[in-house]
Amino acid sequence: MISKMKKIALFYSYNTKNTSKAAKLIQETFDSQQIEKHNVEETNEEEFNAYENFILGVPTWFDGELPNYWDEFLPALEELDLSGKTFALYGAGNQKEYSENFVDALGLMAESIESLGGKLIGFVPNEGYSFEHSKALRGDHFVGLPLDFEVQPKLVKPRIEKWVEQLKKEF
Image (cartoon, rainbow, N blue to C red; front, side, top):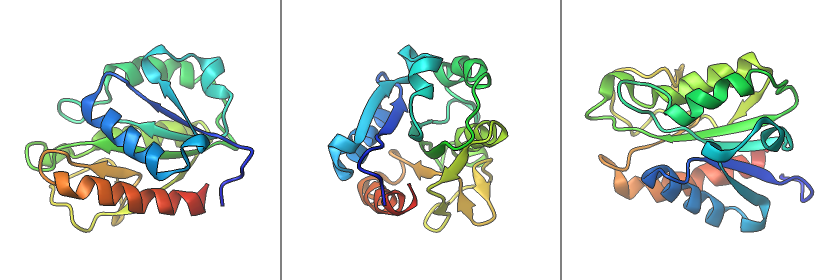
């Protein structure tokens, strides 16, 4: 269970429609006092390093790329030791139009975090999704929560609610 003392940092871009919508639902599903939101586009290493528990909003852009703001923050992140820190990832993707690289950015971010010593939680089964390939897939689980606002909009909220209940046990 989540320690009452340790806040969870929720880093995402405030300028992204779907990632922001998901962040709001995540915060509402958790005890909102437990979550501290941060705009990744305006953060720095010191602010990021102040936490032990993280939820990162990492949508996939273009043909399986990290968004610019995460791509630009990665060099700073690589200077940090993430040992002992716990990360849960979520991200938007489109499994129909980008079936060959569905939520690849989650996989790219997971690799970076693990290479720096961070621990990943919040793996989600790939059941109920239809895509060709994803860098976010390990076996039959995603390294975080994929959300498809275009193809499966009615599943976004229930998937977030189920995932947050899982995170409450894993953090």
